[in-house]
Image (cartoon, rainbow, N blue to C red; front, side, top):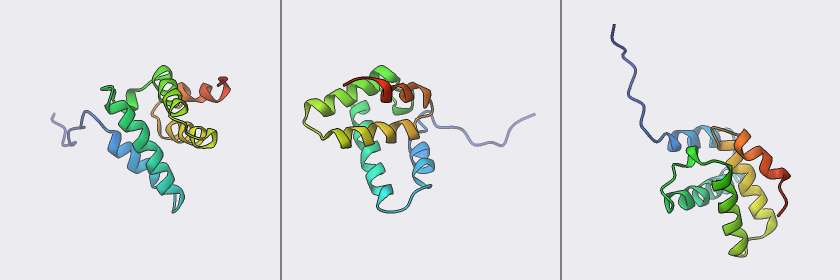
Length: 100
């Protein structure tokens, strides 16, 4: 018996982003899109698929934002956005309990 299901692309990141952003309206969706783009660009520079990133990767990205002078509120929002879009929210949930 053969399946008529379409092939699943290796990187489903764009689909995850679309599904996550579909819940929101402007201006929230624009802010979240920027947050995800920032994290996913960071991941691309390290050859990490964003949805396969784990807690250490996310912490490194956040530390990079701190080093570059981003405001604490921006870093916190980006962490929350990544956690909300992540396929493994438990890997980012504990970040809110870590000290900076």
